[in-house]
Structures are given as C-alpha cells and as structure tokens.
Length: 284
Image (tube, rainbow, N blue to C red; front, side):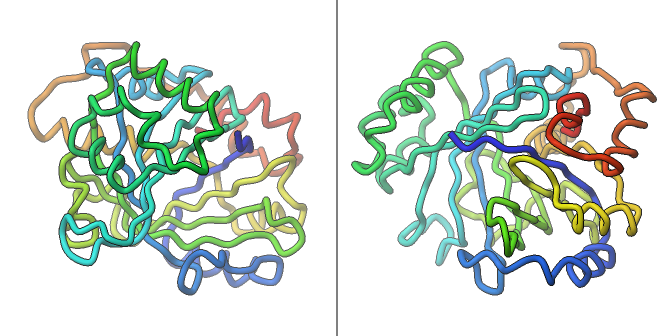
C-alpha cells in the first residue's frame, strides 16, 4: 500500500504559473504524460446511503473512497480500446493517506462500469500480474459484501504532474477543469462537458510527500501566501449532481464545520511543517 501525506490548495491560473516558475528548478515533469499533462477520470462507488460521502462531510478521522480509475480520453464516446483501468481503495487516517489498487482487465472494468454488482466477482477481473495482491482484493471484496456498492458519480479533470528531482516520491499536481458527470456517463469523458467543480480559472494544487515538505518548496508556498484548503472532488461532485435534482441530503446527518482554531492551524502549517505536525493538522 502506498502511504503518504497530501496538502491541497485552490489557486488561480496566475498563481499556478507563478508557483511552477518558482519551483521548476527542483522538479521534473511526470514522464507518464505529454508535457507533464494527462486526463484522469474516475467512477466513484458508495453505498446507497452514501456512507463514504458522509464520512467526508462529517469530518471523520478515518475515511475511505472506492473508485475505478482510467487515464486518457476514449477515441470516441464509449470506445475504450487503449485505456488501462485500476480499481483503487483510498484510506485516510487523520492526515496519512494510503492507496491500494489493482489493475483490471479491460473486459472486467467494463463489466463493473456497466453493473456495480459485478464487484461481487472482482477477483476474476484482476489482471494476472496483480492476482498476488490477495490482501487488497480481499479488503475490496469484504467492503463490497457489506456496502453493496453503487456507482455514485464520474469525476474527470486534466492533470499537470511534477515530481522531485532529488526525491521522486515528492509530487506536485495541478488539476484543471475538474467536472462531474453522472455515473453512467463515464464513456463520454473528454467528449461531453460535465458540471464544473470549481470556478473557471481556478486550479487544485496538491503537494504529496512521504516525510516532510522540502524547505525550498515550503518557502515558495510561504512567499506566495498560499493557504491549504480542504477540497474533495468526490463530495463536491455529489453536491453538484444531487442538489440541482431537488434531492435534500442535508437532513441525513449534521455537517461538521471547522472551528476557528483549526482554520488557524491550516494557515500557519508551513512555518514548521513536518511529519509530526501533520498528525495534529487536518488538511482534507
């Protein structure tokens, strides 16, 4: 399982360009993309009661997400000839983020995308090379047996990704044009516009690291006056899809609002940011 820390910022395109210009000397483009850019799309799964959504809204210290992720744009709507699919389980325990994933066969991914009940047969849909990840597959199967997952939404965005020159585990990503589509519109990403999750001209910047943010990068954040912010594409997507349909979800649970002391902690985090301090500060 990959485990790390993540800090998010919602910034403007102008701030993004200034940040890249200042940080470029310590970074190199992610070789996966073209000029460091590629499209990321995910179909998120949740229970019929949206348990994962409410874990986020309620500010639970332990949270989970299950998503079926693929990269790039289909050549035409619903034509997935060249896509590679992964089923990912993301865990958050306080501020530590872990991710487990298995690659799916093309046939298996399309079966699950067409009918979430096919998660009952997950093991047979995992590629041969990942069949050895027995613990990950078992955890996903156990969750499916309890939660009876349903597709909740489709999130898609254009990502610009950089990695550290010295430590490749350091990642800096900029997610642009994030949008949400209905869960059955996964085949139309890149061909049909979705509902935007952030204002036009804004970008979600994320710093991902294992131990601590390098001093040089921390200094750039401080110099440019950037403040960490909470943002969940999945939860925001649920709000975008359901509220216009008139479905009232506000009554189901009380929504937790961060208090002023917690917000102040977020504002001063880069003064002495390290692994120990992150245990006390909530960013997501």
